[in-house]
Image: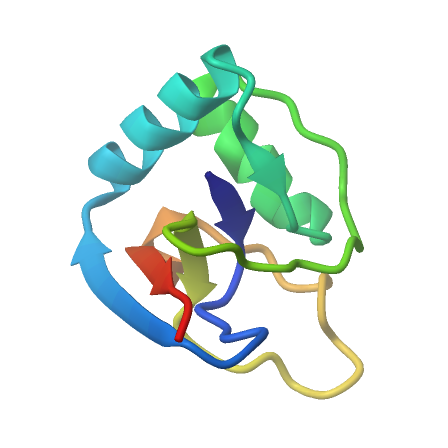
Amino acid sequence: MKLMNSAMMPQPGLYYCREITRGEFCAILKKEHAEGTLENFVSYQQNLDLIEEWTGVKLSPSRGLCEMKDKDGTIVMRLNYRPTPGTKGDKIINEDDFSFFTVTYTAN
């Protein structure tokens, strides 16, 4: 399971995106982390600090390139607004600033 901070489509294929609650997001994240199957692609420390606060799971920022394989799943914590240019990471964010999703990828 991949963890992202946006519902992106890194390559051609079919993507099914479903909104979930923060509680569902946290439960999936904790399960996948415990099983050793969580791949982090979140680079924003503020997001990772919230994840640690909500779940107890400490993750390091990642700038890795995400590649999807057939039937890959993703959990997403998407910020509900665009930061003002040049201020990304400066504003204090909280759980109400996010929407949460699961995304499933199917290769063509």
